[in-house]
Amino acid sequence: MNFESAKDQLTKVLVTEEQINSRVAELAAEIDKRYEGKDVLLVGVLKGAVMFMADLSRALSISTSMDWMALSSYGSGTVSSGVIRILKDLDAEIHGKDVLIVEDIIDSGLTLSWLETTLKARGAASVEVVAFLRKPDAAKVEVPVWLVGFDIPNEFVVGYGLDYNEKYRSLNCVAVLDPKVYS
Ligand code: PRP
View 1: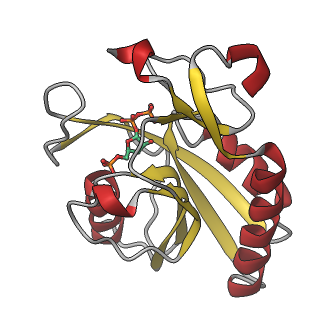
View 2: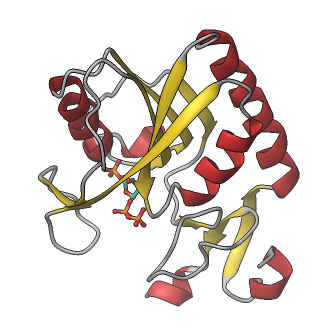
């Protein structure tokens, strides 16, 4: 799906497909440099990180494995409480592994803060984070993040994995959802 095919539901493009591709290549180069000669476990957070994981992992030259978690935060509606429930856990132990968390977006930071603490507590040799998007103005907790694709304003964005009611994940860019869609 592209912006044109949903333009009556979107207000503007924040990150184009071309910008996504070139930034993913830059991020992959950084990751290759840091982990040269190592085996890295990429941990994706379902479902939003699917597109980013697919592109980033294929852009990497280093040897990687992939695993996934599905998380849900307790809370009403869009208000996150910071209490995280595991819907699907990792398939394998991570003790002694170099883990790279692959996230689509850091909003309040609560999910990532919890996840980083949890994976470190399981005995990973190292835990780093690459997040495709970050909303600095929405932060409730400061989470140190190694790599960020783009800092974006605190708007309702969809596309490149991000959804509204499970829609727009397949949009090939990141766009702002027209408020009329959710109001
Ligand atoms: C989104 C996103 C992050 C989290 C970020 O997931 O993928 O995991 O929220 O928010 P936070 O920084 O406020 O914790 P969501 O719960 O929407 O699930 P989804 O990826 O399946 O859409």
